[in-house]
Image (cartoon, rainbow, N blue to C red; front, side, top):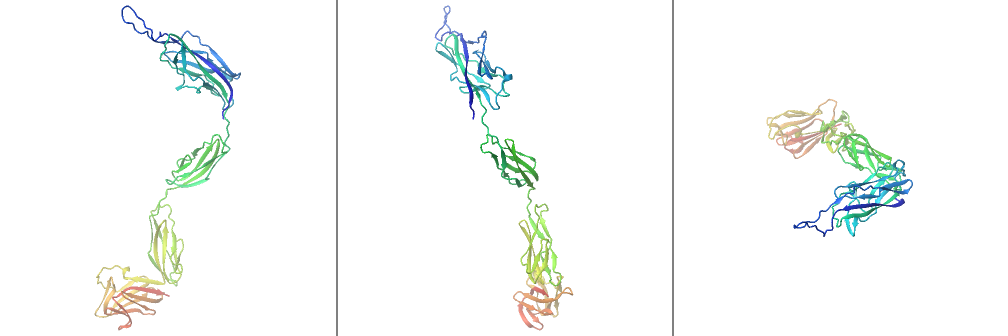
Length: 461
């Protein structure tokens, strides 16, 4: 809070010389019509102005012109200055001020008045405005300007007036220094081109006079900051600094590269067969797209770990007979592979065909089992068609055998369009007679409906 140490009043006398006759007067010459006398204000150039010293106390003496003569054709100036600027000293923040005290700005003659203007620089001054101010490092003279006047004088002769000032020493405002500053976050993790983050600075004490906080970044190519809002620019690390009253607080900002989302994932196989007593493991390979995806981490899961498990490298291990689905996930994309443990499933859709394609064929070898087709009768046909592998004929057979000598088949289930039959011992053969399927020759065993075999399930020991 400011307070006035000393106070003093000062006066500057103002004068204006008017050559104007009374407004009502006129001159008449010869026999012609009279004309009003011309009007003008003339500078009192012969005036020898003197200065008056006003001392608040011996240390603070201000010199103000005793009088100033105004003009109607040019600006007039007057300097307010210190008596001894070289020895002038004030406490830090204190100032010696000269302010306008007058309410009216006019000079008068016989009850007539003419107004004038006083300026400091470009500012027109009024009551209470500062005409001059001095402080440590600011001791030079201060110039007041009285702009040329529009002559509105009623009478010829001298118009006079005074301009009153107050002079005072104003003590330095009471200040409370900043003792510390802190940020709500010591670190930030952001993504280049992504969302911004806002840091909040707390300046101590709450009563500090100036709690202004300035923000800077150690590397604006990585992150910029304005009013505490941090903008991630590019991958890297930058230190954000908040400063108040010479105290600082920092936050370390780590900017990660812009995220490239996963668009897809695929596996090298969509189905595999594992044997608990044979090849009981196989490693699947996942391919994540695009190649520059930010996070290409793949997680692996099994739909039934009692049948098959999978580790995080894609290695699948057979546990027990059954079927499980292995799923690879990257981002929000997935791919899957069906695992058959001790079991092979063959359908006619596993092999290319066309509707009503009556091409004969003899066998299918899956690598684990071989399916052999044998046409023994004269009236038969093996057709790889949409409803089954063969449709009719006498004494035609379908036989399933292991493709490798060390493999032992436990059972085979044959399916037709409308039924199925299970064989638990070799030979694993079914027979066709006309449009019907049987589990023994000569229409023996079980008849499991018609229209050919279209799926075979083979189980191993």
